Length: 112
Image (cartoon, rainbow, N blue to C red):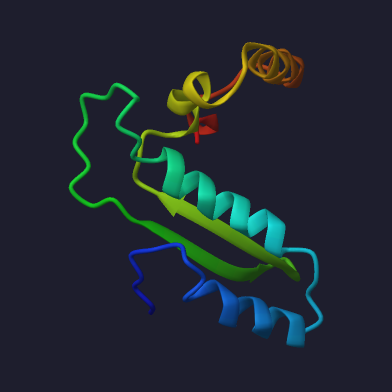
């Protein structure tokens, strides 16, 4: 297990090189965006929270699930629903909420 306290490419470049050697392409922009979101928003001080964050880290996990490469970026921060109003414009939020309404009623397990 690697433990890194930054998002400067120390881990991601070797991972990208290994994925390229396996023939996996086009994943770099997606996982850099996910990492950037965790770094920039998960523990942002401009978002109100009653929670304290003693550990301000993020984790990246790779797995082959059902024959497909899956990449997950996880953190213990505010959560996407709590950061959207600070990070997205009103018209983008409106489009997101309208699309979610079309998909059906959320359950308690739907929150990221």
